[in-house]
Amino acid sequence: MTSQTIEFSRRRLMQAVGLGAGGAAAAGVLGACQADSGDDGGDASGKFIYVYPFETTTQHYNAAINNAALLASSPAAELFMPRPALLDWSTNEWIPQLAESVSLDGSTLTVKLREGLKWTDGTDVTAADVTGTIYLQKLNAGQGTVGWDELESATADDDTTVTVSYSAAFPGVEHGALKVQVLPRSRYGDWMDEAEELVASGVIQGDDEQSALSEKIAAEDFLDEEFITCGAYKFAEIGETVVTMDVHEDGLFADQVKFATFEIQKGDNPASVQMLLSREIDYCTNVLGATDRQTIEKVDGLKEISTPGFDGIGLMLNQGRHEEFADVLVRKAFMYIFDTEVIGEIAKGGGGYYVPATYSGLPDPHSEDLFGNDELEYYATDHDKATELLEEAGWTKEDDGWHKPDGDLAEYTLIGVEGWTDFTLTGEQAASQLSEFGINVEYQNVPEDNPWGIWGAGDFDIAVRHWGNPFVPYVYGSWQMAWFTDNSGTEDAPGMGVPTGEVETESLGTVNVEDLYLQAQQGSEEEQAEANKTLGIVFNETLPRLPLYLNQRVTYAIEGVRAEEVGPGPYELNDVYFDNPVMLRILEGAIEPV
Image 1 (cartoon, helix red, strand yellow):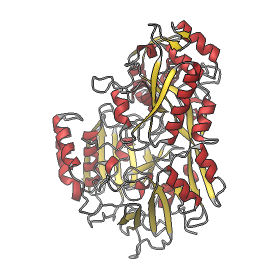
Image 2 (cartoon, one colour):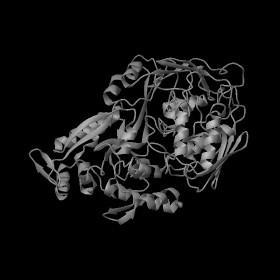
Image 3 (spheres, helix red, strand yellow):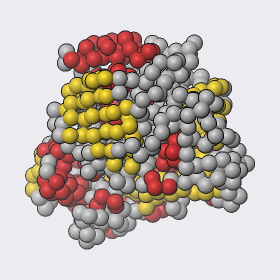
């Protein structure tokens, strides 16, 4: 059965979580909503070409299954599957999209939609589309998903007004409802009604009724019908290697976009490098390794767009499978083995990564206000220190390598993900460095179609995985990632087996991570700050996952061939895969043809 949650794609690797001051209210930033003239796109001209690894042989037009629908989980989806709002990561303020305005007053969210928008099947975009989509998402959201657990109801007060009620109010609670990719009631209405009834009766994800509806939805592909959209662009031609979109004159911001055609070329990493070399494309979000970046660096018109990331790449040690990993001395020893500068340089190249200022579990934009550089233990390469820690933990070094306290040889498999260049290179280097130190580690890739299932099931010894916050720029998202993502602790989904309740620390004694997480998420401003400080210390001392480096988000543009200036503009802190800055600026009309 396929999950309908919005988060399952190349970089949507965690549940919707967050913390911070964002989202209290937003006025209409992008003013108009549709074309004024009867001509497609008004003054739009030319073509913008983007590269993305889509697959028409397996993907379909059922947008209720986001991760399997054609391009629905790509950054370009903002152009044809709009959301009520997107987020400005530099201010944590909402940028209205389908919404004309949004406001969170206590535990009530009010969304006022723009008038005059239509779906490509001719029906109006209304509040009923939004509420129906919210109920589908609510039903299929995993338990513990921030914002969806607290959402109690969504009502269409009239054709353009949506009211969402929550059981609790805290920064970011509205994130899920405002970031849903809105679906047309004309196609999905029966499923929306069923989802609303099930939610009202208390059904949750995993219940028989929810599973039955999910299976019903998964059985439809709509390949014999058109992909219904309400964005600035609509599908014109869908081929195996090229998807062409034209301006949808009744769609959102159709009168603002400057390109008459938006084209998506199919391309994995090697193909995208060749397309950049030949200047066949204007924008690329593929994660390229250091060698590929060197290959394209002298291309005429190439622009490397680098923005600081809120997430990084590290390792999960499976404590459920290997009890020796539960010893904090062992986890610390591993950190002192790694040369993270070498790993980052090989995996991402110069400008593609940065080493954190503190190992607090937070990206630098969040940790700098909480910790000085000397407050926490700093894990730099020190093999003598690593040896000392392992021996203190009862390990011994013999001719064939390190032996665990029970006398068995320490032997592990470290997994990355096929096709994910940064994960693969990181994993290869980490395995090599551990092996050179004397810990026998073999590297393997797992298929890219479902690494989430492997991680969640705990089917690994050591796994390359994210740390920090790869989804939203709120501090408590990092704590969600550190302790709770891929760590459900259930029989079917044990994950990495890291305790999240009572945890022993050297400086703070016994603390309860779950209680601290809720305080960091829902407490007063002072309580949040205190909890964040405490959790940073706990992370630093216990290392629930091993942080190697933080990502610089690097994308690539070609200027002067089809497009003039291509860049993030005021959205330079926005993530590449969520609230993509270039797609936002295309919708604003800020990126123009030559």
